[in-house]
Length: 490
Ligand code: SAH
Ligand code: SF4
Ligand code: F3S
Picture 1 (cartoon, rainbow, N blue to C red):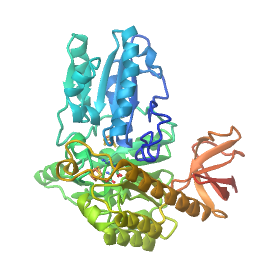
Picture 2 (picture 1 turned 90 degrees about the vertical axis):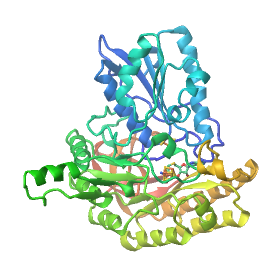
Picture 3 (picture 1 turned 180 degrees about the horizontal axis):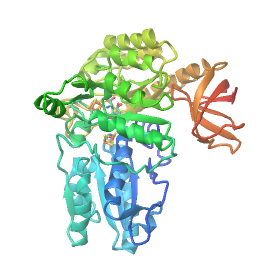
Picture 4 (picture 1 turned 180 degrees about the vertical axis):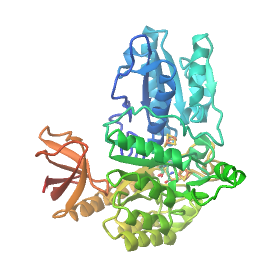
């Protein structure tokens, strides 16, 4: 689950084949005798997947175990995404399926959580009559109470956005876990106000989690046998924690204050987590081009276990469009960041991006600037979308969504085609190299093969040999497809 957005139709939202499947499902039945059963589906980004693990934990404390089978469930939660119209339509379709089940099992409680709950609030209860609970991303501690209200015959609603909730003290129940890789939320919300984006409205103000609780979680995961953690935030580079409480306490006790950093930034945090163990890999997402510092790049370089892979969404290669998007950097700034990455970390550092085609007033020449920026960078990977106007955003209020859908789609296709070319080229560079791979499981295509990822987040498939899942192997790459490297253990 390494991808930031696993929206079903991420390549352009235009392939409707798997429209009603979810992005993260529960892999284990944990409900014990006498417990009520909870079924959760999660859509959208990894933040949502991580939140569902918090939700499962909160509910577990209140005598709910999980089930893989929605038909068995007493309580169904849909953790939703609002990022594009398509994401919301997917959830609506899924709700109709659950409503059918509920007709057969009237006692089943249905709750909508996450970004769509936050965006639509009580409107959702009116539109989706069979929904019992609407809970925004900062209200998950309140879920048992909301379920209690439904048990009493009411509806349960909490869409309050908090300035300080980080769920730092809640130990997540790993729902979609292979026992090897795990997600750790390091911050919540976003203050950036990109004009196209609904996230600041659905997730509220940015706040960072106590670094000590993050390190503790990473240490606990490592002790349980996990080998990789992904640190999550909408903009990890603006992570900032000041230890005011502790510092005040130390000053009062007249203790020396040199033990704990007064302010922890993302570079400091990366270092703290990297030190948990050289055997624990660290990934992180998402980096913001305006905030990623050279310090962060040097920290990545310093620790072998920090993966050499940066998801650095550019959105557009044209400075006028970037300005309209309120991204607060321009084309030159982005290129400078890429140059710095290559200078400090070398060409082996993987870089991926997100792209939006057909943003308000984008001309053909401006679209060409996106293609030429792609030619300059040669991204290993990109998530590519056409612009979808979101209610309440700055772009919806101030700009006209004036690019016809056929044009948006055609431009998107050009972006997708070019990205394919670059991915193939970047993958081919790995042929002949020996790479350190964390073995994550048996290959989806063949029982005789394992699959894992290298530092640059590329999937490598190779014959099992004597290797074991959850260990590292050195694999020599001898071939590749557009998405996968093929190799043998050396
Ligand atoms: N915080 C991350 C992005 C999170 S949303 C960042 O700033 O990079 C993930 C991606 O969805 C965005 O990078 C953008 O490419 C896409 N996206 C967001 N809003 C969109 C919209 N209204 N239409 C199309 N794509 C959108
Ligand atoms: Fe949205 Fe911009 Fe925040 Fe990313 S940085 S979540 S695109 S507002
Ligand atoms: Fe994530 Fe979608 Fe919300 S991308 S933050 S779940 S709008």
